[in-house]
Image 1: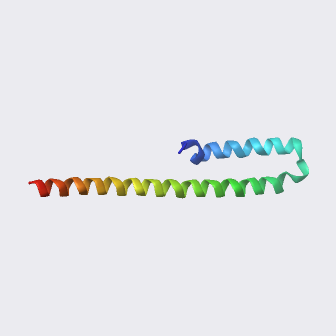
Image 2: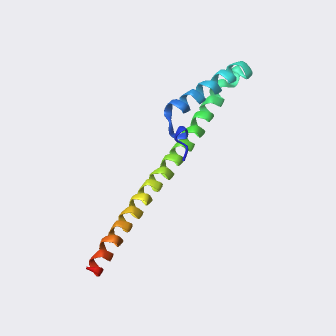
Image 3: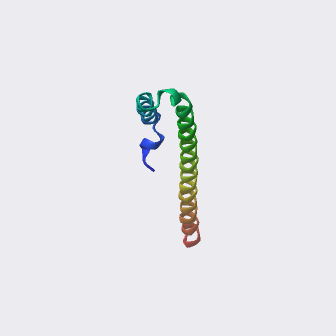
Length: 78
């Protein structure tokens, strides 16, 4: 997973860029549109963070299972 997607600095920079573009394009609807962009951005970040946590947890489980299998294998052969 690309790290920049979870990087708060990158997200803040992205939101600032979007806000600047909206000020020039549609100043009267800027707040409404920015609120929706923020909501969607936070939702995406939350989903990515959850997926990353699941990935880390599954990686730890695989590492633990592999280590246990190796130690059990040595015990049976010894």
